Length: 608
Ligand code: F6R
Image (cartoon, rainbow, N blue to C red; front, side, top):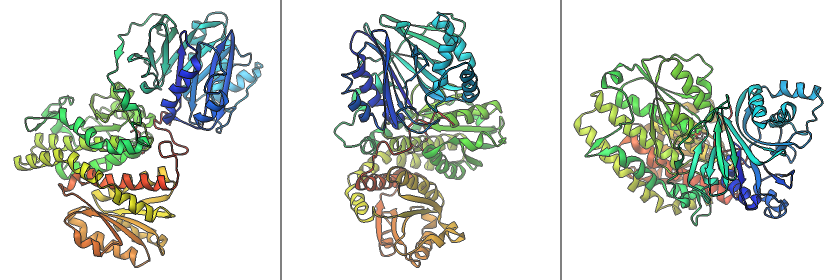
């Protein structure tokens, strides 16, 4: 949701800023811009479209001069994607330049007031009011101005600010939107995320809410809103640089699909010791766990789809009622949650605004919160009572794959762990579940080794206009993810439907040649889904059926059949999702779509 990068040092800033933005493009890519202090003037270049437009405009940064600068890649919230709405934004006199990630909720009131005072606005963005506020309140002290401006802003922000009168400083502040500071030798950096600065340094500070960083060539000072220095320990980033590179693959998404066996092994490994599930991150006594009357799962998008799978899994294994809730809905519906409710939040980025706020709401109501998060030290990870990290590594493609799979793996670990603690599973079941879980990475590898089948099917079906994903029980939960994956990257309209629900309305949309992807892995309901397949075929549908190896008979039912290895029923989504990811990927590739950066999307959604 917008990427910020900044540099101050002895080198020309523009090439580094562009390479940093390249690493952040996943956060937004409808326009980009740079501002450099060139001999006392703040010079801005910005361009609508992907970063390559800005690169062309600036001749790869060669025609922008200066050793201090800020850059931005945008995901539009206020004002359409355009040159003028692109960041950085300058104040009326050109004295201040601002890049912003987040939303200023009271910007209209501020804009009106500033317009009355004679400020001239160029863009339709909320961000421009910040630049104008700096100009309006500046009386010689940059720090006082920052504090004054922040006191006027409602909403969320990470900001990078350049001041013409302070040519040797970048100001960085944040509230709710992430921002890190990279520490170099004679040069320092700011960025929305680690990959942007990884080529330069592995030593960072994570800025916290309401902290103000003054970044100079020879050091970084951090203050609170009372202008008192804040002491921070620098953090060392262990990441492998290659993890944030494509490594020979054409797209990050394909690389990340292929990385799933490793991501799963990495996630499972620390939590399985001597044949037992170990979840030391959960700080709850057995008695507390027994006291829960309900589990609430809060998440957005694909992470929510993991929550829907978890509902089926937990209810079956633990016999506790589970609600999987869209975080954006939960927040505003006066939810029935108390200290007898266990809340589980799921988020790859750990920064999703809706999920974060829903989590706070659950906490306010007395619920214990366990977060399943991929990004270390992210806001959700920090604010939850307990956090279980998925060790998927950096996920760059906008469409999630390996994070989804590792989140599912954690759900299975939790089901086994709680099932045992609550006495809901026998010793034999415990051993069986754990054995099956440990075999999932190898079975995924088996599916990946056969990816040509999905490539072939994609080549036969990529012209589809509308696609229906149908399934029952846990296959319905999976169909939600299959459908989202396909539509978000290939732009083919698709819907996920509980197979039994189709005949209550939607079946009227089925006509000759409509593609229906039927998920038929749930053993108990194979007969039922076969009936649903026949119902849609009778109306002309072309059915691609995904089932387990043992159901070879389905070959004669559907027009095309894909088989996945067998495992226990509740873990089948871990396997079945992989052909669906591959199908979406190959269809999007055949349609020539921008797979890693689908239109209108961004990786980390830090606005409501
Ligand atoms: C879809 C996708 C999104 C995210 C959603 C939540 O492929 O990636 O639907 O799952 O935006 O994001 P996180 O998990 O970062 O909270």
